[in-house]
Length: 579
Image (cartoon, rainbow, N blue to C red; front, side):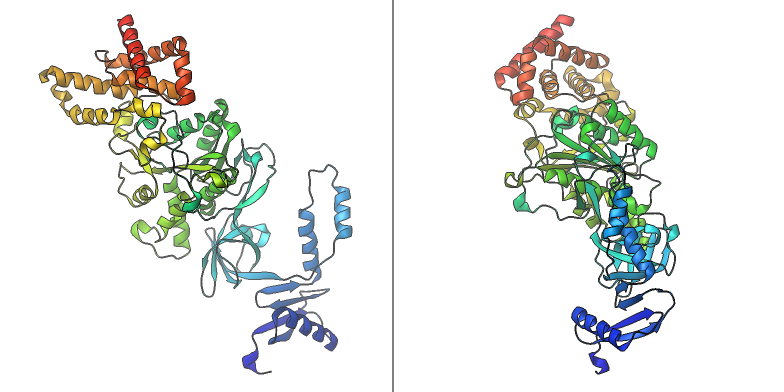
């Protein structure tokens, strides 16, 4: 055989050199497995007592005593531990176990540090595949080069050292899924962190998946009500939409997301909250809030806290999306919140720089747009032919000094279907939620509103925009004409109307009757500080004396001109009655 014909080289490690008969059997095996042109070389080694180790390229056949014991250990790990006395099961497993000489693809660690390992070998490894390192440490392939691969580690890398072995699993990164995850808090790998015991998974979903095709989607035209007055009336969110919540630190972004979850009670919508880079105490507080308001039963919390490694923070939103897709594929509606994607981008930037990827604008790698687009594009409302389920995404992004023109905010704004911009000045002036009417938008608009809400909201946005334009004249209040002063009082009343305490979402009928009453100038002449008590009293009276109208609005979502006029008349009578 010519040297040019040799395609693979097989190396046999053992204590004793094999006999001619054994070499012939090895040659036959290699020919059947790898074809012609495999050269067998023997290397004497005392490391493989009681057997041998055959290496063909990246394939390893470990028939040593230690290799067979490791096979038995891996078999025993899979013995179910929830069947009571496991001793008979262990005995049965050992009795029935037969060792096999199967191929394992083994690589070698070149360098390790900061949660990143570079590995030599494993020529057939795929992007996103899970690898097993020394001590059971798991990692995911993130960089494939000509002569080595870069891998991010999900566990503590103390057991991984230069020269230690790495084994392929053949599985892409994924997360366990199932109904039992509802009501639980887990980490980015699906492991429980709430101390409530193990979770029985019904399946395993890859964290990276292709977004639904256009032909598999249907238009976003079904409301997903948040219970927040300013959002449902002016920037409605539909099932399957992607609406960005953006603003500076401590302006109420998470509060809006939490209220949206609370408002889904009784509406057959599963909620998933993904905390990325948050303090553990903050995540625990959110969990306690959901439990207090009895909404944890239909919610899942996935936490990759600030103390977790960057790889876990990187994979957390994808794991949450995979869980959401599991329920969507069953025809269910899901609301998923990513809190927040600016910390997610920072974690990815750290990984990319450690993997020696070239930095670009603001030191982010060139594919940071793809990082979030392939995540958010998976939000969709599926067509009725394939179940009609939906995933509605509310990503959160933190800005610095209100700068929406920074790299990550502009990227995500261009991916989503609108944004709710929270302004610091409004927040600190007492206007909460601090929604900036001018910069916020929903590109779905009235399509995601009921007919009653659309009719009730009417000119609200225009009236508020006019008020914001005229607000500058308030410093000259003594010199204003009566019409301008009346316009300013009307706008102040609308702003007061939009104030809403946290954890108190409003029902559809409550928002509709309040809007109809307010836009009819019924509150004209009421002092600003008395607007909120007036609205609260009016709503309570209306719910008590006109429960049939409230029920009709909630049930049918419609309101004709006659009903609108009736609400205005009742509001005027209520105002006159308390004056």
